[in-house]
Length: 175
Length: 164
Image (tube, rainbow over all chains, first blue to last red; front, side):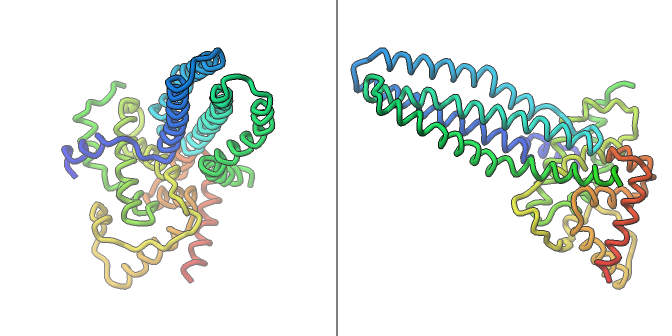
């Protein structure tokens, strides 16, 4: 393979599982934000603007800014940073730590998104209907459980596989 | 030590690409896997080369980057171990001596057996087959050289069992 061919290959973006996980997490958060923004715009155009609607839009804007300023740059930094030059064990530890921290941040952000989702529900009924409030309070543990399960099912397995490799190295050291 | 230039890196990459082929061959289960892994290792080497200061041999540095990338390059269903079939195109980068049929058959079987090892064991075997001393193996893997030796002996027994 010539230098020209090598340069063609390295021009591609990373296809590592970790880069994919971070891209997927970002895509999911963007998709939820787009749905929520779309919903608020729809309600804003259809109904008479209310305080609940404005408050909901405010919360959504704050969370969107938090995601854009804090969550995405962290994912991006972790994807771009080169960690492959250390020993295998150090590299595995670093990957696990970073991935766990990203998953935690992703989970927290998903849980935060429940707040603007609640406001979307309130906005639909124009006011804080007590049944809707009760529904969102009761539904929160279910949502929490679903977020946890979703994260573990789609991304947590990868952390487990990395941990298995670390255990393999630890066993060698302990023996 | 000063950083190497892009041209120097590409030249070193070109000269030592056999290392990547061998790692892809060991870690990739299918042809697509091997090609994807080759691409990913190349990208990681490209991203990492500005950190190469020339204090260690280029090939030692290359082993680290390539193995770290290969070890964390999982595929869905990785736990279901498959036997790898030798494909001439992926081994074209390997420099092998002329073998007779019997030696080649044994070599194929050995590579199949290595394919059934886990990612860490494969890395150890790979470095061992490359003729690296235990000090370098332990440095690359981040374990003590005594443990690398013990682990290697166990892998040899495991491979022998697989082959008999």
